[in-house]
Image (cartoon, rainbow, N blue to C red; front, side, top):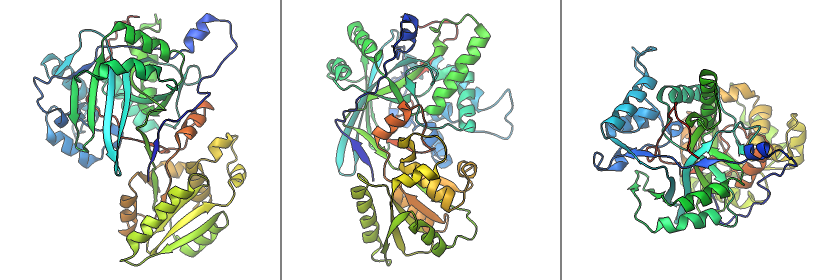
Length: 478
């Protein structure tokens, strides 16, 4: 189950304000800048795939341990260090990350470009039976508060991971990975500006453990850099992944403003390394994120089915051990085909040899169930329907409990979810179709945020390709 957005034309991504002040107009511009990228020195690291990592927030503890063992210079030591019993304020994972970063830079594990560039980043990957290519660029973005500029989030953040990322950037004064963002390049102007550089040999190229090919080129012509900067100044930017890191950077900026006082906005700490990819790109893939439910006392299947039937048309696919694969395939096939015009969900309950296909009878009922003054688009999101109607109203799990991990966990792997229920690790799994990119843009543009874990953009950006050092005593040269 996945969704590919190819050649999408989405209008009205930018907003027009009747104002006379040039200062306000400048503030509303998305300002990007080239930077002096830091990357692994190929003279020191012969096989780059050994030192790369997925983003910190999709790494399990077991995967973290494997990355530690894979190479003693793996970037995991910077982004997700281990904790030890003797850790203290003077010796902890954040301070160790800072020491690793500074030491690796001094001793030639890392190298840094002499001149500032914008970097093209391309990922070529296979999903299902097809091969896709996603291309964008990496630069610095001048930080903007969400309620004042042209940078729009679409998901809520949680205090614990935000505090973790804040401490990392505070201690290390660096961006070790990119925030992932979307923009509209409907006329292909930025793609055209990047095209001449893609004919060159990439200066970073590797295939990771998931067989995804990553390639990076420098845009080293001032005319092309200026062209991209000017084009981006008229566009809105939508955060796809990295909300916690962006908010951590905002907090760090505010701390530095209080410390140094004479703030102009041009300081290095008022910028963040960001990856930008066009919404119209042919390789923009969103996977669904399924819900696993547990710790519900006395779950009565018959009463649960009866409650569901009040809101959903329920179709059941019974199966035996031999026919289960066929029933599973039929469920997800129908979810995909019906999902374009209806709100449909799949479900599997522990101990039941059947899959459920749930089709919402009338989306207008969400206006009554969701009491908040939310936009219509928000009330009609599949994730809103699942959480507000099924998890909260029918199962009786309040929102705070949902977010506490006591009752709900998430996975983008349907087979994994089914296995977890079959083994008794969870009581039921709820399967969703992918969130549409149009919904992401609509919710963000309305300055609303989706429920937690609404989107899974695939593939994730590889951590370790490029890094940005934040010079606290310097300003960005414009």
